[in-house]
Length: 562
Image 1 (cartoon, rainbow, N blue to C red):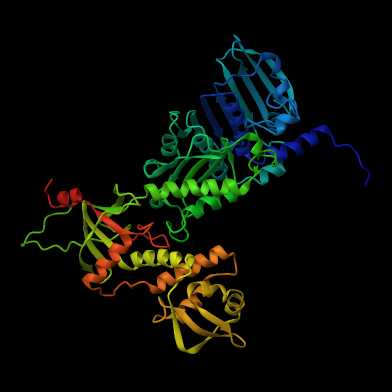
Image 2: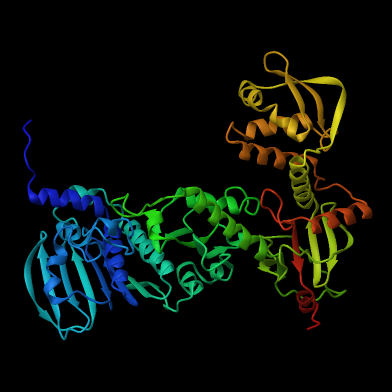
């Protein structure tokens, strides 16, 4: 096959395919242009999933009359002038590909009026070529309208999803930039219905309320960088563990206010929540990382959706540290608020049961103003169902899950003693054999020596058999064999940090008192005293709450004393 130059129209559509893969891509490029133009108001209108119509209107600086046509030339841009500029990109758009790429796959109309000009200019493009131009009155700003997206590329249309799905992608784009720029008023209209409208107040929590709702906004915690001059500076808000979600779709990351996708940043945030969320749950977070522009490369992806940091580890640590600090300083004790109940009269006996924690049909969970690092002094009153310790605090009643609380105590105790190399060990009078499955053997053969850090003395003893000579005192009288098998079944041979964490959690779980176990008054008092001294007393290592709180005011209200 002979080599030949491609037709310019084919080249344009290939290039457009890198930038515009669906209607949401058009919205993203146009919104970024509006933000680069310093707009304080941006409205987006779409119809038919964005295939029928996309219109983005702003009040930015506009395009001068003599430059409007040039804006649709490939690689024409006002944002980059030389190679040095590529090393320190400050604008969201910079490649000069957005407008020509959109014009290559749609009919485009533009009306723009630049700052200081008395009239705007109108442009119509068909197949990427200007077919109409003239003056038109409008206030300062730019309006770009794209009709019939992909109308001449039926193959591309076939790969689009349903109208509802494409609308959801568009809504996500607008929502993300509304979170990145809370000082800008955003509005989104989908098929004539207002889907989003933000106030542009400059307060992130206001944008979060419009995007995610008042409940999420009311449970967000602000991140505070140690110093305003810190680099990288991590700002934004993260959600209380009470508003966790089943997927990662509520994680929003911005680098110098550019919306990016980053597995590394997601991992940093989720590690900060470790032990605070239940397994399978994910946090809500809106985080902006500010750093010198030369410290990040934004030119590694055609759609500018990914970036490369010069120092990944520093960014990871800064994000993880900032989120963890905010959580430990602000996390609150769950408090039950009961619905109004009727008084119990002798002639009308009603059974009123207080159900602990979320999901109880009689109430809902809100937050009490008790910071995580300073549990109040509690006085033990008794035990409920041999599972919950009832205690009195300075502001009402506390119900403590004895197993979850003891897990937290032991988890921190094991970690502390392991780091100090003083785990208490119980030697066995005679070694005991421990048989394992082939998969368990493969893991244990590579890890048995590391278990010595936790008080286990284990050595190989033939095929799929090991000798146990000593055990941690914490589990020596428990089902230690079951604990080891559970550990080996649940963990792979991953990195040492995961392994150490898994061993610590498993030992704490198996060593803790059980639900249904009767405790003496002295035992309950000692457990509560140790919980008060924990660094993170409000959750067990699995992320479940250790306690709930009924305030004095709520008790008065339910008994009609307010």
